[in-house]
Length: 186
Image (cartoon, rainbow, N blue to C red; front, side, top):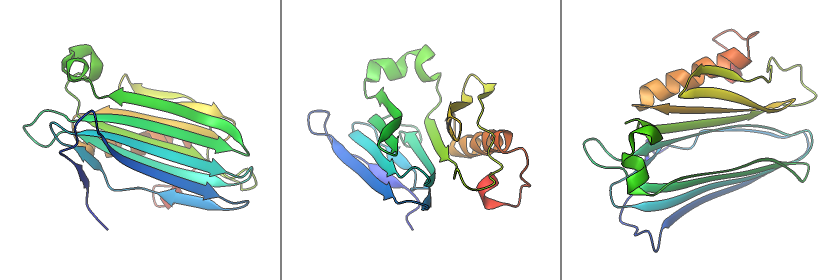
């Protein structure tokens, strides 16, 4: 498995595209953590997740985007998530971080270069320890309840290690009955 995906050399007029489409059938589940995407200086990339879940399907999807390699400016990235459950939209989200002027604005990302996101949609028939609720650890680490069985975790961090730690802490906050050793609790 690759350690990271590198986005480089695509101009804004002709961006690189990484589209992942998944369909999770009835009673199915998917746990996925694609390798981090590094948006190199001068690149433009569109990253999309299109996930269709049946009514009783489960999903645990994590993504990490690093804005630029060490000591370089960020490349441009458009992140889109289109997730539906039983044909109804659950999450329609786009995060556009392609404009270099916006990236350099201190209020935008405040020098944080790692965007980490995790969507957890629990199985409605399982006695899951998931407790959908909104948790704010800081202005840069939030778990947002989407419905009675889905939570979106979002972290903006200065490095991948911190982003991973914050995602883990948010996951534990919405799964308080878990021990640290159970994989779905992380």
